Image (cartoon, rainbow, N blue to C red; front, side, top):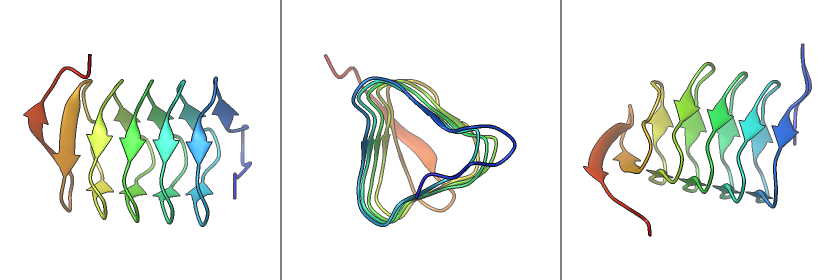
Length: 101
């Protein structure tokens, strides 16, 4: 389900949103973002280019997730995540920097 509130959710080129996901209003999905099953994205969120969000994760209103970052399954992202990191846990914290290329 892609939500519409005060504004519209926006997608770029080829994002992938799987079954059972909820995407809130004013969410921006970057190019080639992958949202796995059961993910909840609440409200105004920006998801960068090439981001992967694992199964059952929750993204809280007002968070930005940087380009090419990975969010582990079941994570709760309550604070913004920088580019090129693996973030896991509740709340999600960056545990590793990496270069995907």
